[in-house]
Image: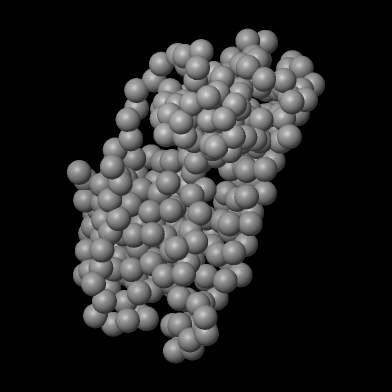
Length: 311
């Protein structure tokens, strides 16, 4: 694992992972870097070098979790600035590129295919906007007030963490739909271009979420409750096995796409609820798609269900 420190040369940081350039641009860092260190470049741009190093560590090292000392050395204001500028980048750059690419890619599709793909993307865009609106309108002002010694009645960083929705699931579903289920008439070069944009956004959002969960939340918790113990959530590795859906799994998938609940699916197919749950886990494992909306689009694109039968 490469550890990024403020005394590392900026050019070496970029060379270790060129994707970090987009993050540095968001933070207000501009090249060329010459032989300057991260600390020297940050001081020139009036940025906190420990905060920039911390953010870069999250982006470059998937296993990185900051220590209590690293959190204390970094700037909460710097993390808030990164979050705000990332929101702007996602909505006004990344999502715009994906939208234009989807629009071009689906031109040869049937009207029903166009409708279902575009609706899935539009719903995700709306979900993303609402997620960021909550953080911009509620979370960031709360932390800013906290830094000024002002408490907001009825709100805490724990409440934010409890309600922190997963914004990567649907973009992962969109990626799998484009990779596996787009009609053959779609241009492959356009598909590859779109996938590049989606992969980049998915990876960036995953890092963004880790910065919020593993950096911002414990930093703010230390302000709310000095001396609080810092802990990080660990996630079990997901089973990446893939395979063809069985006939029974296809039947269950159709029922899911039609909006049936597990009890209703069990009654329709005369099986137990536990068996339904097992089938649904297998469907998600094999397709790589986790959300009901994503599975619905998958079922339509693979001609398992007619769009008119969807509630």
